[in-house]
Image 1 (cartoon, rainbow, N blue to C red):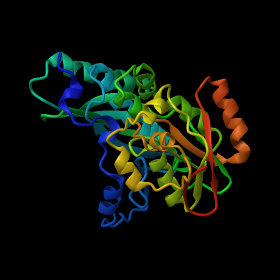
Image 2: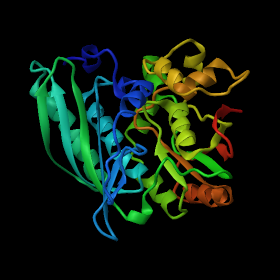
Image 3: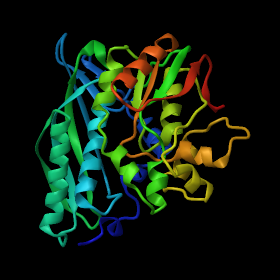
Image 4: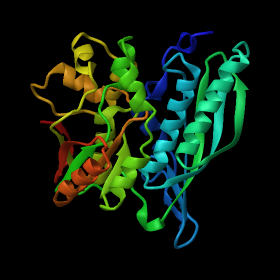
Length: 328
């Protein structure tokens, strides 16, 4: 069977277009004037949200990328998880998904069937249905989903509404890109990349967070930078929870394709910080956790709720008045 990663130069969310270039490109777009467009490009977020009525809004997103693992079923499951998680990051629930697929014609049918089958299983696990899609020929394989979900108009989570005095939490450890690039045992990384953010979002929902985003291709620093800039606040990160072996790989000089682009996009004040911590913070994550900003007085309640559900949660920093991103 053909090794999927041999057909691509960079897979997973590390294949994302440069955030700095994308931001420059989008500067020329005039925001759509529509009363019911709750979230669009002004500012952009993890998904678009359109209000249908006082009780319902739709969440619409799409995400796809080249393989980051060789096993086709694992690739399909990771790609589906990554796309579905954008809906959870907006506070919504997935409803319907369509496949976005590009594959070389010479790949065996069973390879494609494994990708589609695993994605279908993950979509169902998220409470949605995979109802079709579009497939084209391409020398470099790519797969992902367009996903439609629902959310209450008053329950939309944005990344642009963090408040001074908030505590910051992360619902998955960091380092998936480093671990995969290290070519060692990726079992733990794959387990996290195939973990939907559904349960974490359910645990957060009752505590009315001020801001939420998911950590993917721009790394923790990139997504925290977006949250700080768009919220008009200063974010200070003081703890970065690593996957087993991630810091050791970073210390040994392992880096992913997204590292340089993420450093260009998200400057961080980090005087004296070890280089391995910077590499971990800039590491492109695939299907990463939720970055949650909520009032500090709710922190213990959030931690208790995650403990009750036996879910991972790490307190990673705080929100202050001011601007910029710092590593304490």
